[in-house]
Length: 278
Image 1 (spheres, rainbow, N blue to C red):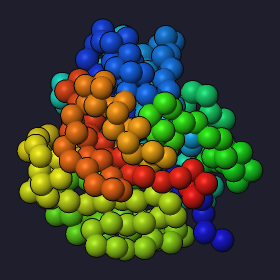
Image 2 (cartoon, helix red, strand yellow):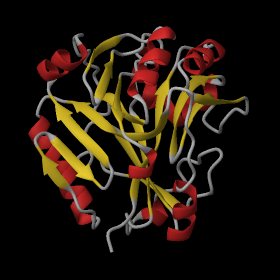
Image 3 (cartoon, rainbow, N blue to C red):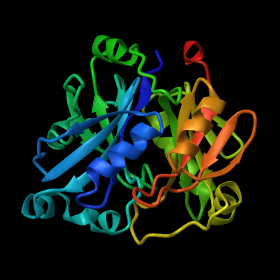
């Protein structure tokens, strides 16, 4: 049986003391949001964009000592915000060393994972990747919920990596996922895993898509170029995002390409999909 696999969480830092302003911008763009005022064990306060089967976490630092102790290696992403950490939910990506990996991350508004573990960077190049392992029944109940904002966006559909050697990165991801028992379909520069995709481009291809140069960052986890979201109605997404101040790079009948947001570093690809087909 093919294990279930989906993108459970994505983290990006945001400028300190701008949480409310950024929350309001994403609300104006039609996203469902939630602000957690509880400071995490790593000294973070986070705003969450809520989606059907996961969330996008926008974090600011509220306790410097706690943050430095747990997340000091994230300093480049605090200085130049962009998404860099991804958590995958699964009922089948077991790891024999998971018991030594600690409890890792915990997600709000979500059932507690049986365990979590961090992957090796050479297995999943471009991001800091975590796996949240759930029992099948818990995962099925959690992913059957539909959360759709006014912009008609309801799920994370995939990730786009901007990396110097896209083909090599794609092959490493394919090897890791295949070893875990997942069926990966290769299509051009993409890996399709069930209803989600991993896309790989170089800096020139990125600039062609987003009409802006790729800004490199000196960190192995600094290659997440954009988040793919699924939306029921592209015209509705275009209306809300553009009115909220997000810059549209280009569009066609199936996709919108959104330039990186100045405060969060988040670039988006909005792809048309009906929830019943997801």
